[in-house]
Image (cartoon, rainbow, N blue to C red; front, side):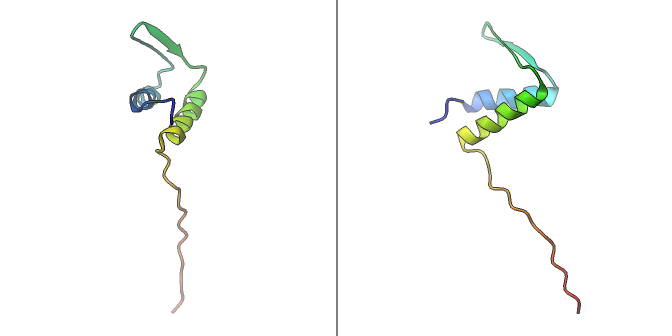
Length: 65
């Protein structure tokens, strides 16, 4: 079971989109060291919440004739 909630995930994604590294919500202040740290935590949240889709690489195939 994940220790994160979807609300926390969406809040973090919104912060990353805005470029904000500090947030005060419900009397609690959270400050991240960097945008890179926020992205690492977002990836951890995605894995914990089961939001990671399998990445599929597609390679074009060309045939002569």
